[in-house]
Length: 434
Image 1 (cartoon, rainbow, N blue to C red):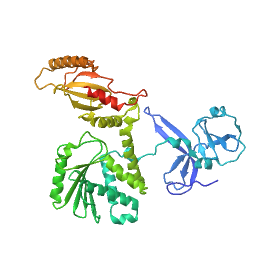
Image 2 (image 1 turned 120 degrees about the vertical axis):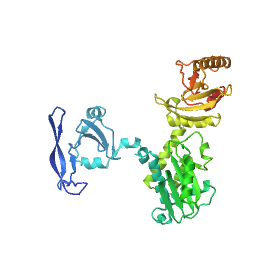
Image 3 (image 1 turned 45 degrees about the vertical axis):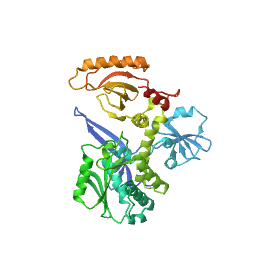
Image 4 (image 1 turned 30 degrees about the horizontal axis):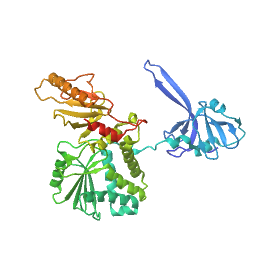
């Protein structure tokens, strides 16, 4: 029998008993005792001992039925070393001819080398599924750019080249040639700016990193001024790094930032993978962005009934190519929704808004106007226009009196195929009627 070793201090593990004592609210004590492996050096490691699985039947020389302590059985195929999903052992025995087991396999060794068939359908855990904050993304960008210094080429050439490629994309966005990176200084949260990168004591890359938020309060101009005060002689290359999507980037024009969007970063990362980058952090981030990209495009291939927030964003971006509107998230007490809105050509007081699967006509009364009177007059006018043009608008079930009021709506504006997929061309034709 092999001696078991402690994974912490490598001392011998010995079989012992362990007690877990818990006090109940009424003052009684509950003792749960179970056998356990305990470290001989008393380093604190202990592991519960469970009854080992055993082979109870076989089909020829290639398939074994392994019985676990909870009466669950699993089929182990020896030739392919595949362990199939568990089910009650009696159910397995009833589904085929099984013979009495006559072998003498080392079951624990076989199971340790077997491949669980369920693993084929699992998605690998991704660091960036959990590290979703802007600070986590800042850390990745800083980590990647740190690899751009020339000496790191000797440690990981492909990763070094990918880092230079990323920085090079920023220079090229600003119509500047990529310099040989002789020195790089990376500062996080410089005067509230997410990342400041100083290259060759000549250039300052300003990165304002937004994952799922947008810029606000003139912050972009303030960051440029702060860097100018601290480093007046450096050439500034400000970028607005954005892995999610937003309706427009007009707010970047005045402070002189350029958007560095997800599609550009995917180009950098995918080139890196093609050239041989194997670093798991790099590849995790690439897979994370690819999943977002796949989600945005999913409106084309998934039934409308299965759309998530990414699919709605993708649909609105495509719609924006045909209809001059904006889109974004609208929060409310019931959970919020993704919306697309645009001005009415019929009358300037009206605007139209898609609230995912619902099309609404809305009005915003002027200050001092009687909201009820304005709403009733507008609703009468819009419903009459709808009937004349065959627009299928109906009166809302509930009439509000807020700053913005829905006066008519339609729930079936999306045009779909018999399979429930979006027919984009017909949907745009339908919306343009409004």
